[in-house]
Structure formats: structure tokens, C-alpha cells
Image (cartoon, rainbow, N blue to C red; front, top):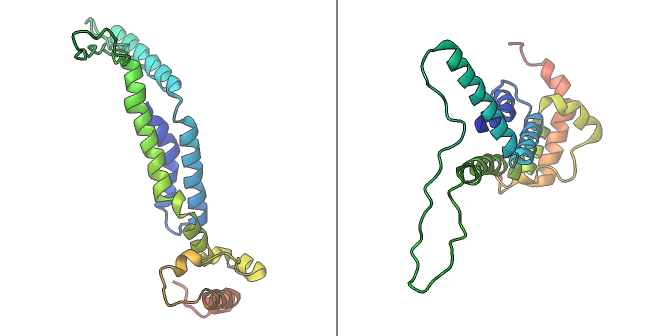
Length: 193
């Protein structure tokens, strides 16, 4: 049920990222939204646990109805053996870590770890490159009409220029603006495919 929650948010995003003619800005906003939603749900283990319990009860009822066996899916996680820590002869303290609670151990070491890893992965792969995606959106032909009217934003194309060490930002912006304003005329000279 942990992965079901993840796939509910990431599934539509994955399909959109694999489409032809991808709008970079829309895709980036979808990634940001998925990361925010997953982060907000990353500590809602109680809901996942309740869904799992409901599924197990339903599965047990179905098994009992269909078979004559005494087969049953366990509702609770098996109890973990309590780890004994070595103590000195005169030591009377009790180890404060109680790892015998299997559900708590699963919540902390599995559920939280998986959710944190998914959110961190989305953020490191996409969200940290926000400016690059915003700059790439300037090259989307569906937005050329807006760019021709309002012009190229002042703080754009700086992250793309990092990949072109000899280029001048102002020159690139002027060339892009010239292309954007003449795009409708240039597009007519290309053969339809």
C-alpha cells in the first residue's frame, strides 16, 4: 500500500513525461506538484496501515468463504525478538531502544525511508533544476506568441548560457526574440510533413 500511494501520484506524471511534444513547463509543474503531494503524505502511515488491515480482513473473509482450509493471512506483523545489549557488571540501566514493536519499526525504517527517498529523488532530479526548465520553456513554439508580445523575460536563459561559455546572454536573447517574432512567417516556408 506504500507503493500504491506513490504510484497514484507518480503514474500520471510518468505517462506525461513520456509523451511526444512534451511541454517542459507543464511537465515541470506536474513534477513539483507530485513532490509536494508526496511530501505532505510522507508521514501518513496510519492511513496506509488501515488500508492494509482492511485488505487483510477482506482477504481472510474471502479465503474462508472459498476454501475449507484453516488458512489465514496474519493481521499483525510478527513480534521482533528484543535485542539484549551487553551490560557491565555494575550497570543497571535499561536500553531505551525498544525494537520489539514491529509496526513502529516498519513505519520508521521502511515506510518513512521509502517515502523520503522518493521525495528526495524527485527534488534532486527535477526541482533543483527549476531555472533550467524555465529557460527551456522559452524555446517552446506554443509560447512564441506570448514571448513576441511581452518579450524575453529579463532573468531568463542564464542557466542555458552556462553550457555555452563563449555566448553572450544579451545576444542570445536578441536572436531568440528575432526568431520568435518571425516564427509565423518562417513556419510557412517549411513543407508540411
